[in-house]
Amino acid sequence: MIFWTVTALIAFAAALLLAMIIIRAREQGEPAAAYDLRVYRQQLREVDKDLARGVIAEADADRIRTEISRRILAADAQLQKRKSGPSQPRALSLGFAIATALLITGGTLGLYWQLGAPGYADLGLQDRIRLAGERAENRPSQIEAEADVPAIQRPEVEEGYLKLVEQLRKTAGEREDDARGQALLAQHEANLGNFKAAYQAKTNYIRLAEGKVNARDFTELAELKIMAAGGYVSPEAQTDLQKARAIDPSHGPARYYWGLMLGQIGRPDLAYREWAATLRDGPADALWVKGIQGQIEEMAFRAGVEYRPITPGGTAPALPGPSAEDMAGASELSPEEQQEMIRGMVTRLSDRLATEGGSAEEWARLIGALSVLGETERARTVYDEARGAFEADAEALALLDTIAAQAGLAE
Image 1: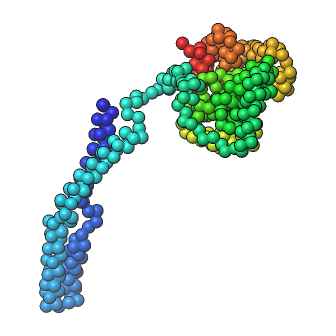
Image 2: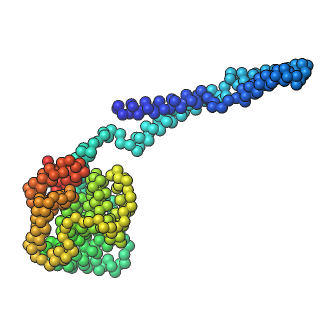
Image 3: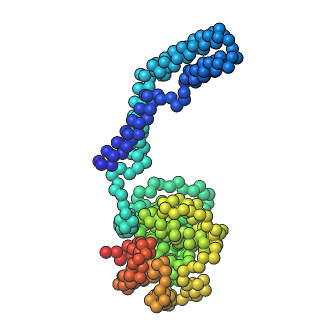
């Protein structure tokens, strides 16, 4: 109520000031009659000077004085009439002033009601971070999000293709242990816009692949869930993205959707940071780079960052993670060996941070990786240690708190 009172008073004061100016109708210029008076009086003085020098005769001087005096009287009459009479109708001025006051006051309050957030209190940085963490924990699930998505328009395809997909569904249903069949079914269901059926088939493929999956598989699974939810990154899709990032921290599509998720939970600052780093890593012709380029300026605006175009494929150093050769080798390992490989990389990162230190992003990555591996207590210990290392850095603490909230470590 205080806000509305103060806003109304400010708007009314501005409107009242403008109305007073309209009613009084002050003129900035000088009437022409005032200038004429000064000229005529100067002419009278010149006549006396000319008479004293003998330039004109006394009779001529009297005649000239009479004429000038007549003009002075006429100019003075015009000046007095200008001062005493209104320059514009008072009723019209009063009506226009009232209308202007109502327009300014009512328009100000109306615009705020439509564009502002009535009743929304001012929030400090720590409160916004806390709310973002709560939003991340309490946001709708995949099922809830799908229930709110309106029916999408299916793409038009040939009848023959529909029959082939129907046959594929039947075959995949009869061969539930055929990973290849599930992968094909996921692809073709997505082509038809059946994203829920597509991610269910992709889930079956990952289960049947016996651990021989990579970051791309988990990112595709997350992407299908996001498309089924109308562009919303659900907690289930976030878990898939965490698995993809744990396997390959540099995987571009996973980084794109991770930034999208951060923006949705109210952390555009972290989303912009993630997208900016992804753009610098490139490559310029990648689809996820095009997606980021179309949205990063708005994300920067939401984050309060002055956006400067970023050239994809720059030389910014990437955070430590498994190389392409490591990932190629991981796809050939058994599930137990692949899990051991991931644990080894996590352990090496943990040891390096403990002995040499590192950036807040590296600590956050370690916390996320440990939570994905199910080592919650160890992740909590690392989180506490990282907070101690960056206690003087507000941005680093914000990043760590958000990652901890997403990993379920926040108190």
